Each structure stands twice: as C-alpha cells, then as structure tokens.
Image (tube, helix red, strand yellow):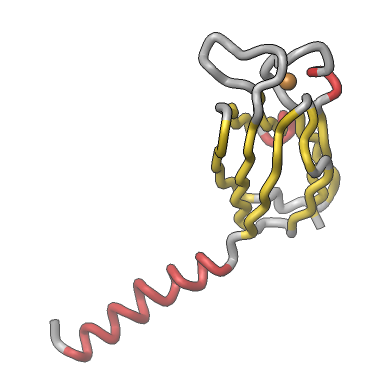
Length: 121
Ligand SMILES: [Cu+2]
C-alpha cells in the first residue's frame, strides 16, 4: 500500500472506529436474588450502551436454560440471561425519560418484583 493510500485508509476507517469505541457506555450489573443490582441505571439519549450482566440462578430455570432476563418492553428489548456473565449492546432511546426494565423469565416467587429503571438524560 502506498504511503498516501495508507494514511487515507487510517483516516477513513480507523479514526471513526476509534471514535465509536470511545462512545460506548459500559454498565456492569448483577441479576441475583430476583433483583437487579443496581436497580437504576442512567444513560445519555442516543448513546451506545454495552451491558455486562452477571446472572445467578435463583429458584427456577427456564427450559431453554435461562435464569433471568433484562427486558425493556417499551423499547422492544429482551435479553435472556444464562448463569454467569452475559453481554449485550443497545442504543439508548433519543427521548429522555424513565424506562422500566424487568425480568421476563419466571425465576421464582419474587419474580414479579424483579424490575428497575433506565433513566435517559
Ligand atoms: Cu424473573
């Protein structure tokens, strides 16, 4: 590759990739004891959010092997969680507000209370 071509390639391909990587907002959570920890997470409107959720089996486990899920029904998001570390990426909504997240896998007697709030600023 000629030097000029190489520089052009770095500007066109590498720079936007680096810029994109820096904009990802990493959030680490736990899903255990039929709770999300933390129960409130805050993001900026339109940003890319990478969720790392470590899940622990409580009372029940689904037929598919999921122990919990992280779902925001208002946004049509549902990430099923296996025991151990899980990782997902989504784009935060453009509209600021409070969005409820919840577990949609029947994980035990307190499952209905396994909820939290995504605050979009
Ligand atoms: Cu549940």
